[in-house]
Image (cartoon, rainbow, N blue to C red; front, side):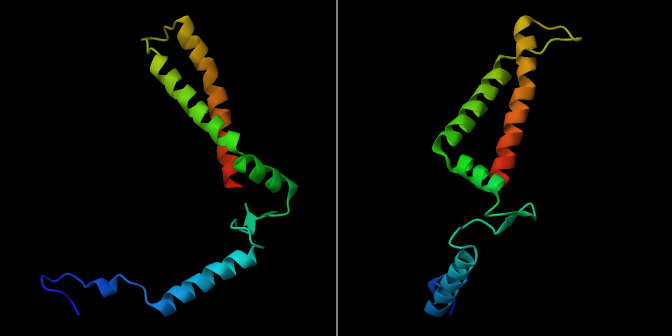
Length: 119
């Protein structure tokens, strides 16, 4: 029954016990289907959980220093963007030339991170 003012009552937000048990069973079934691993059984349509490349990628991604490396790379890129001085008509200075040479390194590192996390 709705409360006064047209607002739904609290019961509409609370999950009944049967629904909760059903959802827990579904979640457990999915977890058991992957051998207790919360990751999908396949990645990129062909890399199974037993694939050596995927195992290595998962180990790298779950390695705590990997997260620190990602954050340091993001911070370094932010500093590089802040230091860069745009100049008209292809003019440049030594600092800008060095920063431009770092762009491919940042791009490659971000690409590798995305690839590893996606696996």
